[in-house]
Image 1 (cartoon, rainbow, N blue to C red):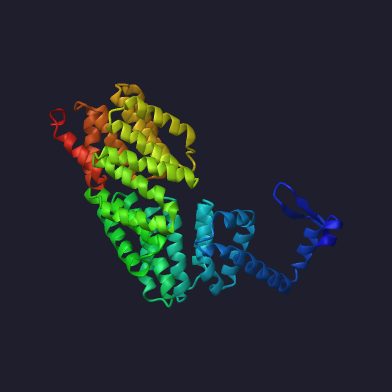
Image 2: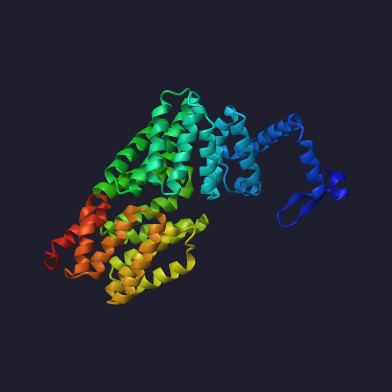
Length: 427
């Protein structure tokens, strides 16, 4: 390699911190590859090298540092994966599928994950049940990322059905079941099938409680169960959250902001406002200590909702405007449209109906990018409650849409909507 550098056949690129070939060396390699045997041997070594490098992300303890090292190799990893698929390197693909899924998920390269896992599945024979099952369940996640909920549910369901027939090890089966059920749960939530989402959350909780009761996964299972239980039934199990907080403090402090934000939100929904304020303050402080921007923003957004509950509308408005200036829509889309929703409510409370209408419209335009029916209906409920005090033609049209989709509306919003319909102005 030193001789290549000294003769300028290899050049170091400071911007990318990588070496590039001189055109003559590229031509030499091209001519060399005319010999198929030489090419095949080189490409096999290339595939093993880059897939082995990728496999470092198989371990869930490896995160951002490993990811930063891998991102410059994205093209090589994709090439290695496709070659391994073409050559039927099933053992390597079986092990690397999870690492590929984590790489594409953490780097938010959802199209890449979708394309490569789809390619792998297209090259896998029907009788190779183990690899087919692994690829289907991991691919389901990317279909969910891209809002193809029906395809995601189909792939996850097929993979979960095949797991029991496979010879995959018990530990790996548990991991795949968690992923497959998790995809089903978020898909049902996204399409407003709230009871189904709750039932799947119970399955995940039972699975993790049985197999991994002392793991961070158990904390996640509790959070998801409490959230889906509240969405479907309006029940907030604070005892479960206390158990999750204890485990998070012992085993994974990075889950604390998530837990404390959820608790704060549930306190708001239950009108326990002092407890809500305390939880959200703790959530923001923990998120700042751990440098978790997403949870800093979410805690601040719930503080704006708390200010609305306390009828501090100017304060809520100021918090929302400051938050929108900080959040990046590309990486925090949900926080952006949820903040716009709360800003619209605050403006309506201040009788600034034109501004409120503008912010509701903006929130709806952004939630459609995420294609989340539950979020869409939540904004429409807020719009109905904030802007329509009389049964105008537009109010009747919106009311009909919400009544048609009543079963898809999260419980707290559903209750507010039903209470509004009982008021004299909407009789």
